[in-house]
Image (cartoon, rainbow, N blue to C red; front, side, top):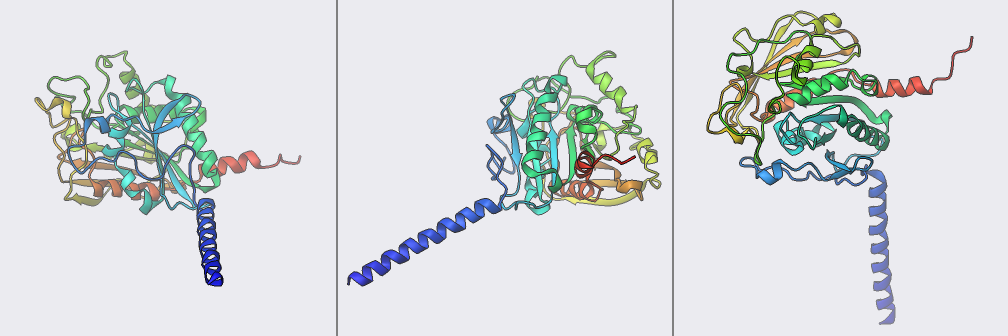
Length: 371
């Protein structure tokens, strides 16, 4: 009898030890970021996302500034696995979690091995005072992943977040790191399309809890405004080299549509603009601007719904760059992107050459030339 009890005890101890070993191995095998869980936090339902969820600035603390952000990554991300790193910036008057659902790449992080940081501005408008915070986030993630494991680093920005991407990609910190910029109605390098006469938000309503838009802060327009300066910056091509994808709603631009010419495409000796695939979505996006329901304009954005998007590409760009435009048919500025067009943009991003971070590391580690 005693022998049977002892054998049972030994089996229990062995199973416990094996379980502990498996857990320890799993913890050593998979990437876990400091102060961040891998499971998506505060994910909106398919429709009617609660206002308290939409305006959330994120659960992860950036320790130097003590500001928060969202960090999404695959739970089964193995150490040493190659990933694409994305810094996604919300528009003016918006929030981090609205941005996560306006461009919902979090739904594709596992399939395409994405690590996505979505920060939040306390004033809801990005400025130079936010640069250190953004730099600290990027540095922390690169240090924890290892630059050798980052295939490509992309900036993504909606509206004023896109214009901020255009500004920071010219700074010393970002210019040698960024492989691509995806502009979500945030400006087009190489020649901007015209704007319709009634562009901008309609109706009354300042930003309010719910689903804020991505436009400029009230009063942030005019010849000498930050918005005017940001638009002027688009006409001056940055010296840094990277891929560029521009998206817009059909109602945000005038009847001439997307320009055929692109100075950015010329920079990389791309072929003439070519009409690519049409993306069809039967599902709506998650979010929209609910603060102006009493005066919605097509140019600003209506309620979410199924849709189509037309892709235009400039083929055969040198250095493996991708230059493309995507027009969302019958959409405006603030309807959240549908799943298929979101995935189509991800595929375009992943088709571009990356590796700037590895090149920068190799340059830094290279021994001095012998003379």
